[in-house]
Length: 204
Image (cartoon, rainbow, N blue to C red; front, side, top):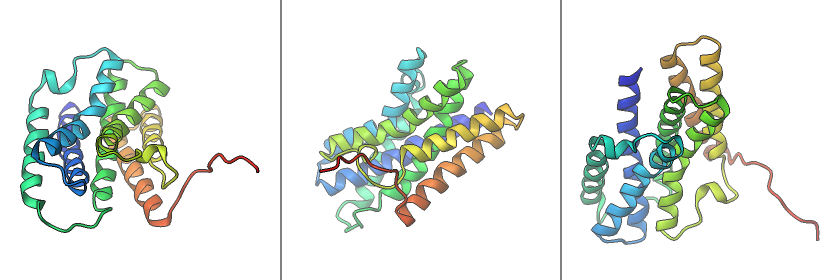
């Protein structure tokens, strides 16, 4: 399980770095700006999780994560630079990154003896904070804070499913795959069918 989590974490870092580059590219940022956005997107959620858990920050204790984030950012920048891309293209890899980071964050929190509810919320934090930083740095309202397709809800559904399956005796590996599938499936379905939560509105 530890090996699976490690590779899932590296994959999540790479995918989130890619989304950061695509979003920063729409703002016509230079290489330094893109590097900052890509790195923050890739490493932000896990950093907040580790600080809250009081564990060593993952990319400081293992610089492979940092190398993957920087390398992915550089490669994607030079590959897609100058191309005309659909404005919502980054949402597809963003959904995959959300699923990967949510599962990794939840499993790490459980391994550090966090209560089940705390673990699921830390999974959500791991999944969404990178995207929040990306949107803020790109001068946009973060996806999680605007009326739109299910985002954090998708992450929490997958995290809860993962915890529930493990409580029922399902192996951590199977539970992780199931949780990731749920996050990705709910997020993609929400994007395709415009699934949203009720919004607060005052009567005039």
